Image (tube, rainbow, N blue to C red):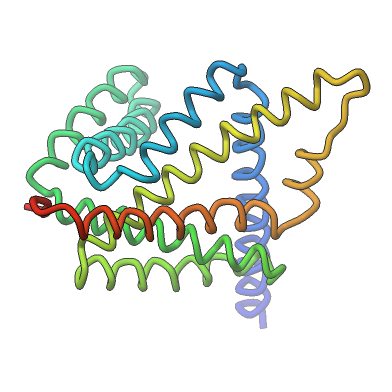
Length: 230
């Protein structure tokens, strides 16, 4: 009986952690939106659109950058244990960015799987399904994205670059709208309300441009005679 009680308590703690993680992700996104100046927002939109539509041309650089950032995060976490966070971050960045070059196909597959997980977890959240089980939705996308990556690697490239470009563009657009709201004679909070009170909003404005970006990239790739993943 005690074992069942312990198991139930563990499941409850895990569910609570998943709900708080969703809120942390939304809070982090909102923080990025509110701290950007109008100039930074315009730069984000410009880079995001290029990322969204032409990511397939520069995907190798983007993969190296993504894995460098992952390495920096892990390195900083490791550096905390040894009392030297900057050194850990630099070492992690260098190692992961260096490994991303010879392991390009595997890295693309990893990013494609991660993008699939983000999309399906976003759909889960938009449909108001229980947030404590959002990891189940993420697993579905990770498996699907991983399988697609190993079957059609180009599809994986289009998926993660379109999603990344969509997210960056979204942050820039919402930052401009938020700044416009704050500078009105009577400031409003429509953007904040949409993000926090309407679960369908964020997934929709991220996933729809992602699908459009994938469609446009596919058209570009079809007309490109020399493009391959080596």
